[in-house]
Image 1 (cartoon, rainbow, N blue to C red):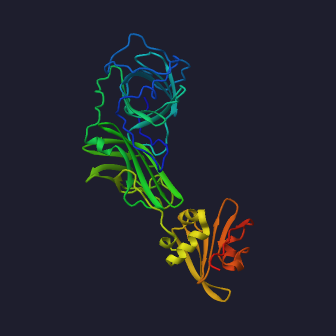
Image 2: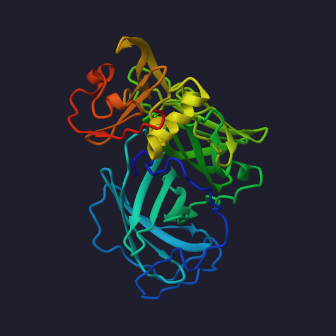
Image 3: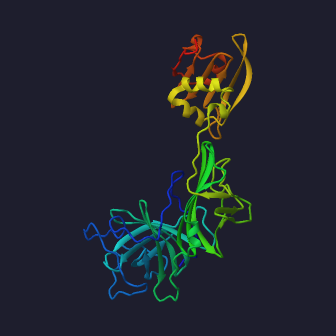
Length: 407
């Protein structure tokens, strides 16, 4: 068999992910097996690990293989299974069946090459059933596979051991390792930047993690397995991204004082410009409030905050979302000094423009192919003031949303 190596497997999620218990008893109405028997509900097998069948199905439509194919036995959740794989270049084909039903389920997938982990090989396979369940896992050796079966929000730990091998089945996770399980929020997360870690404990020596982070309009995401040893979980990647760096990128997780600690030599691995994963996470989803126009510096006083909020109405949140701060400068307008400047947001600079005078507020935001313009100055109700004109240049459609409550 080809030399094995782990790989990062892409899946989504940034915000809003929810923790799941992967070790509960299967819900027989929602999870595998989904076979070709036509039954809507299936019972799970009760055989002990390692039980052999007297008859085994054969792979149909087998692709040409570059390695020998042999049967593996193992389990998905509490259900005993057998499986067989063929490898051809980066493609993987196979079949598996539940010992209780002995009905073939075809598999097809790939060995991905992006950010592969050192010394291991990860495969991603999709089953040929109505539910299109996914099997994602890592070959710890040519004889030993660990990972999970997933369909929708349901996930079950999975392992396979080559028949005839003397490998001991993996242990269920201990209470200590289960402390990793769940959704974690970066300690430094705020409205404009943050990160999350969604960890699924599969076995006592294996977890699966998904990290996502964002800063402004830029974001990053990383998904992989980590090997658990001595209370910490570590993934070491074969770094092909940072040319000339001899050190492999690593991510190491540990629990300390009820916090999830992440140690890495590349917190920006897999991220966009200016984005990095946090080094410390609190359990659960952190409630983060939207700042006000006063807090981000659009306006200077509580009175101006009230006027601005009423002026822009239901687009208030849009203005805040694109404004970490405003790069103001003093300019002359109609013979008086005013402050004029564009919004700043990493990856989306200048989506808003503001002019603040002693009496009036002028605010504009770019839509899809138009500008929404707001003011409480009747004189400029239907025209863009000069300090804003250069910023608005190139967009012909302007939607005027003026109000004159202060008149």
